[in-house]
Length: 165
Ligand SMILES: [Zn+2]
Image (cartoon, rainbow, N blue to C red; front, side, top):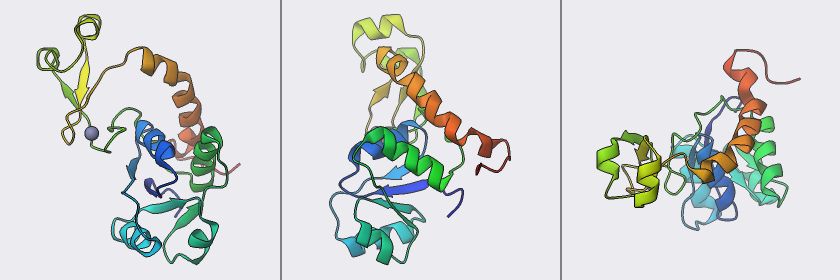
């Protein structure tokens, strides 16, 4: 599963799923499913199953990783270092539904975002699946150092250098 960059998070890992999407990874986060259904979905969509359930990860016939920590930062680091996915493109996906964002014109965003936000920003993105709008505001600025930190963990893969030290 080296280089795999499509994930499926079990129902315990919703925050991790949102962050993997923010980092640009195609990450499914289905409503609570039985173990077998999770594995079937992962197999069908060629995703690495990320689960807090050690037994499920061990007995699963699909690529699976048991996420060991409760701590989000540690979870993200574990996924990125152990699975060594190719670098994603941060903020290319909707963190809510995993849709691929498309840039929206400023004019088109006017109805959808708060007026102050609209006035302060020139670029907007929209999720074609759920309609959520995105812009690089204070929330983004706050997350950016973390995003850069995580991206650096996988950046060598993008340059074709083996990622394992
Ligand atoms: Zn969406």
